[in-house]
Image (cartoon, rainbow, N blue to C red):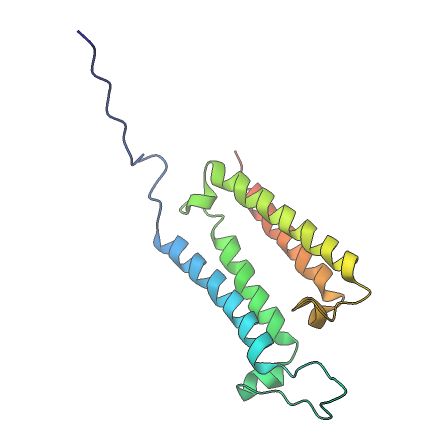
Length: 156
């Protein structure tokens, strides 16, 4: 007579829930940061000067026009805070294999961001966001790596 196999649990109480309030807030911050940068780039900032447009005008909310380049600091800041929140053990990326995935992902994205910037540094006019940030692209790449170190502190 064959022995019955023990039924595997789909929820492991030691690992915690897959979705938590903290994880939801982190995902919301990541999405809001990306949306803020995209809205500023596509809808608010003045288009690149071209010969056929003598006086390019920016559109969108006045406060965003007044902030100018600081909009990238706000957008990337919210995005990186969201990533940092996912490094907490209450989220799936903050425990087990998720820590390694988050850490290596942030390190590699930061490295790729810097390498792409160096590869196109002579003419960034055709690459969105890169063309506005110029040398600040290095800060964005290093910030990705710094977030990777927040994951590294959770690695066991």
